[in-house]
Image (tube, rainbow, N blue to C red; front, side, top):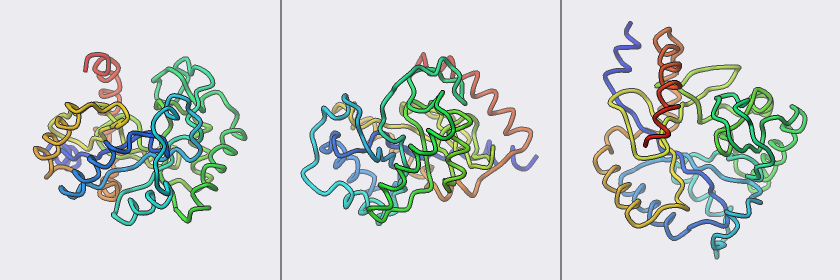
Length: 253
């Protein structure tokens, strides 16, 4: 009973930044970096180790050493995650993905061996630059049981995705739920907010700035989230509830 009472007593927020690559909106990234540092926000950065996504490649190429900048983020206490491998969508998951999200996928439907190879190649790129990575999340939220198994066997500690209002263990790995892709929250539970800075307009930045100011006391780090793992009956129920709710909510917000 105490776990459910604690859950409803406090709202905690984590930021997850997707599509971090040499080609991106670095001007916006610099502004968000300064904002987050001002309010001591430690987000999770989703780095694409070998970006070959044509849409993302159309953004300006950074004029500095990308991997040195990633290491600088890590020195500041920002968490580094692997966000796919090439960020290429080769098929549609047809809702056969682990979360039932559906849509284009880089991983779903590939064999365990193929996925293990992709993920391992991605890790090798990080290792070449002396960056340790234990966090994964897939492009478009689409992955399957082979992805999870490969992540586990390659030493990944957690996946930033899933449903519910608290982190949980499943299939040998920690899931930290990612509920919203906009600046939307509910009054309780641990919630990861996904941001795509490449799509940010001026108004989006100011919305983020106001949101951070308003909610700064509720923003936590990845490590803090990992200390709140729970697998009680109530948490399992909330996973089902948030899954059903968000299937509708993501269309509306």
